[in-house]
Image (cartoon, rainbow, N blue to C red; front, side, top):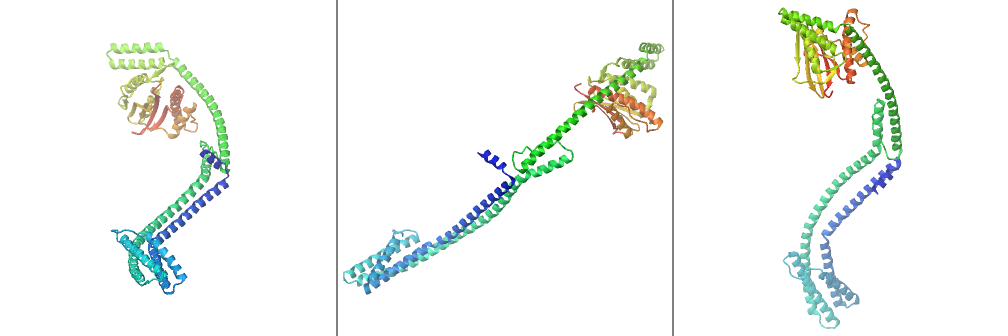
Length: 502
């Protein structure tokens, strides 16, 4: 039933909803007015009830006086009207006596009512005897005198009872007046609360009807800023705003479908571009292998081994060790042409290469290696670290003393390898060219630069792009390499992030 009324309300027009809301508010205001009248009547009733006992006692006293006057008129003039008035007044006195206290009490007012009750009965008894004697033409002087005495005592005690009633009713009146004041204060608080409630109710009703307009405005601004990832309205109402929301939803869905079509075309073009980049990488790799194959590996190894034996025979241990390190470096280079390698293997090859460079440059080269005592068996393309170390050595030796630092650490699902130098650093424009070219698989354009700088940057760029491109093709992602400024000193830092699960 609740859902039925809710759905029925949603199906109405906006004008009907506004009129229904206003009607509902007026009904509540009418209820408040009725409550106000009820409180006023209650306050008046409380005040009038406070002195009701005094009014009743005054009426009783008047009836006693009427009874006495009617008796006196009847005895003196013996008329029908006087006897009739006597019976009417005496009956009212007798009726009122039945409502009064009929036995003694410790309460002062109740006991005074008992005295008035007894005197009233005596008064009625003597007046009745006087009437009966007068009708029988008997002497009435004795009964009539006693009725007069009883009347005097009765009126005196009625006055005293009236004073007691007045004192009691004054106290009750003050108490009732305090209650009425409290009720009025409550009514003021209620009225203020009721007014606030009406404001909140109107705000809620109007807000529920205009809230979709605000939502439409927000979504329209986001769409105007080319943000199409907005939630749909899915409005169930069938009023004007509901129709606008449904039309807006259909428009957003159409835009998203159009964007999806464009993205699909862009994805297809990107795949074609990646294939082209892969072909370029294969072409560059084929060129590298062609150059490497020009060297006869067997002749090279035999020559180096012969040189190591001669050095050993002559007692030149350092020379023998240097030749052996050189032989190991070239053997790794040739053996890994068609294979990938582990991080451990690449670090070992870097040790051989750095030893050779230290023999060559002596104290001018400082190499710092910070590698944890772990295996690091994650795979990566071979000959990845050595070109970066060589690049850092070249740029670092441009100073008086070159400093190259290699660090390996694990961070957030990656093995991060950083190689930094203390050289002059990368020109930001060259850095952007290198990274952009690596991502697109092309060679940077140095046509606008000077010839010497162009030659050096082009030689460096091809080697770095070759490393970055092989990493990108190997891991199928762009976040495995980066070039940053060295935080510790001037220079450049190359960062390679190898996923741990490789």
